Structure formats: C-alpha cells, structure tokens
Image (cartoon, rainbow, N blue to C red):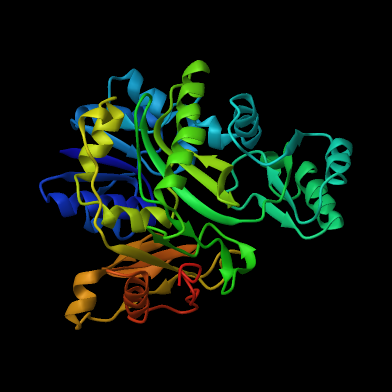
Length: 421
C-alpha cells in the first residue's frame, strides 16, 4: 500500500516504523518528514494542502495519516476528503476539540462529561473573580494551540493572576491566549488514553503515562513530554469501562449531534481522583512520546487499523497487543524547552548486545541529515524505546540504548516510569 504521513516528529517516525515492520512492501511518503524518515520512505516538500492532495491522486496514495494537530485544525482532512481520498484524522470542525480549549470545555459541560470546575473568558476581571473562588494550586490554560505548553499550574493566587494577565495581553502565547480557561486543580494521577475512532465505533488502546516536566522528580517547566511508558498498571478493567461509558461514548454521540462526527485519534488526558476518571483535555492526534511506545506494542496490522478507521469500518477488525511493556526516554537538545539550540552531530554506537539489538530501537524526531550524517536540530531530538516483560526490564533496556547515543548538550530524565516502579 502507498501511504502518505503528514508530520516531522518522532510520532510520525514511529507510525512509519510500525507499518514497515508489518510489511516491507508498503511504500511510504512523508510531508515534510525529518532527516531520518528519508531512510524509511520519500520526504516531500509540498506545503499547500491542495497541491498535496493532487500529488496523492497522481501517485495513487491509498491512505494518508495525519500526525500533528496543526494540519487538522487547518482543515487538511476536509480538503483530501473532498477529492475522494482516504485520510485518517478529524475534520476541521471536529478538530476544534483540540484547536480551542474553550470549545472543548464547553462541549464537556454540554454533554455532562466529567471535568474540572472552570470559567472560560476574555475578561481579566471575570478571570480574577473566579480565581479568588478557587484553592491553590490553580490551572490557567490558553485557548489555542501552544505545542503542548499552554498550561500553567500556578502555586498561588498571585501567580495565577500574572499568568492570566500575560495570556490575555498576548505576551505569553500571542493570539492563542486571548481567551483563557481558569479551572480548579485536581489532585490525583494523570493518564493518557487514546481511542481510534471512525465516527461511530472506536478502539481503545492501552493506557500510557507521560512525563511532562523537564527534570527528574517532575520538576521544572512543562514540555511536550520527556518520556512515557505503557501499559500502566494504574488502570484496571473497571477504570477502562468508566472511561468508555462516561467519556468516549458520550463524546462520539455528542460530536454527531454537533454535526461533526469524530474520526481519528481522540487523545484523552485524564486525572484519576479517588478512582474516578476526570477529563483534563482532549487532543485530536496521538501524543508524542506516547505514540512511540504504543506503536511497537501493537501485534495486529497498524496500517489496517488506520485504513479501517479512515473508511468507517473499524467494526470489521480486532486490534491486538503484545503482553510486553514499553518505555520511551526522550533525548532533547541543550536549550529545550527555553530556546533553539545549535545543530549537533549525533553519534550512534554500534549495538553489540543481542538483547539490546532485539528489544530496543530509536524513533527520530528533531533531526536533519547532511552527507549521511545525522544532526540534532533542536527540541525533542529522538526517543529511545525499550521493550520488556516488566516495566523495569523495558526501562533498563531503554536507558542502555540511551547510553549509546551521543550529541553535544543532550538532555534526558533519568526517572521515566518512576510512578509505576
């Protein structure tokens, strides 16, 4: 099958890797891809979505998979579908579940889906007034897309009001923060759950846990994610069922009522409080680095799952998973997440240990390639993934693989999966 993957990160690399692992006969194209995806397929430089759709028609692309949120919010799915192409992802209308946190919170309230108490407003006075009714810490969110960094957890009321002021003035996140959500802080543990949806049916993948903070012990600023593991032992069948009944089913039914049936990945950020799942947020694509650990755990056909979801036929398949665990450790560039970093040459040691060769791999993200040499370009550079029969074994293998990757200024956390261990 000829498949086009939109995006340039480790998420897209890991999807491609999983597809090629099931069959090397698939032919892959990436827009724009990165310096390592051209080892898996062909990188394209076609920025206009209409021109990209024309390329897909002319080259008989059978399926397009959209990785990141920006093309979805921009309406790439609508453009491809209007031309009769199979594409995996939500419409522009449905993508508002991530594109606007205000839309998302109001949707949750409308369909009685459990979420934190909140206010959405562009008024600094109203935001301050609501803030005064809450007990610290207090959560302040920018409305629009901020690359996973538009959430501030303020430790006191003054911090919350500064965050609100900086967002509403445009200082923090530009236009993305000109409307804000202020909400109560929920005290529990956080999970990432992913439902692959076709508008009517869905398949719930294994629950993962992400590590958002830059430093060990969950210290430092929020990032796009410094590592993850799955499946997490913090979820049992009872909790999965609550998520299905209270969150996923009413969301799919509600989106149909909104005339925006949800197709694609519904990424549910959940806080479990006293055994009850509360919805923190929706995203409309796979998380990164969660995607990098979920893909290698799938033992059934990844490409078939995406194709069936894109053509409203999920009910025809059964998705199966390995009984193993996966741990992914992100390697970031020197100045992440504060500012860009200078490109640094990546040196990969030869993997001599059979155990590491067979049970680990690297998903490349922020990399470029010049004359056959890989460079760390900045941001989150790559993810070292380890598989194992226990979380500890998977984690130990992932860190052994990390030790075989070198570039100037590399930055990693040393405690990924500590909550489970």
